[in-house]
Length: 315
Image (cartoon, rainbow, N blue to C red; front, side, top):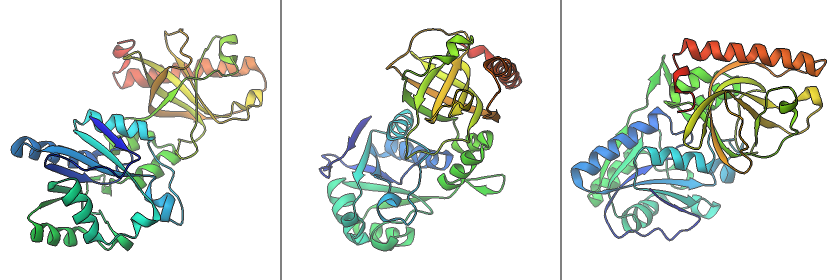
């Protein structure tokens, strides 16, 4: 997949199917849009383009900038896995936000991207003041002979699947329901950095990843996780928090991998979250902390066994 970002020079040389949205989380609703794009691409021999924005519009024009489910790297990888040809992250500015919807349609979608088919979700809005909606887009498509397809929202247990709903679930620590809506485990990709090396002294070495300010994370605590390292996966347990037992001051993501003890400094790893185990606590001593971690590991292993997942260790 070609990744285009940080430029307004996006003119294409071939006709395309354009999928519009922010796609934070690349959840099961988004996946339906990409599935339709692949289907239409096979039928009409068109390239597929995912058109998104960076920064997120709420950071530029919103009253409350949204913390996101995914980093740009996470989103790029997820969309690549869904077999799109190109991902464009167009620069979002106050000037761009003021463009009338018809100008956006003509200048960007029609003239630069050479769209022959446009795919949106039913809650997609575009142009100045969100004046453009699905009906407006239908009328423009009809006028300029461009097919417009609107994909209905998806529901799970009566709730509409949306990035906002999933953000709320993650913040609450409801990882399992969030994962159902995402259609894949909530994950974090990051580069391993040096920590305090405390885990090695108590028999539980960890790989450490720094948190990012513009992302949301589950509540401080311990989670059952899976880590992708060197294209292999390992089960583990992850603590998000400040390590209060040793007076930590930085919010970190610390993961102990089961049956793995290699140095990974400066390597990128992907951590997938499956279940919330317990909240972060301050213990009276390292001995008490060690005993609790041993209990946590047993609980994590029991969770994976109940899910029938332990067989993928190290594969």
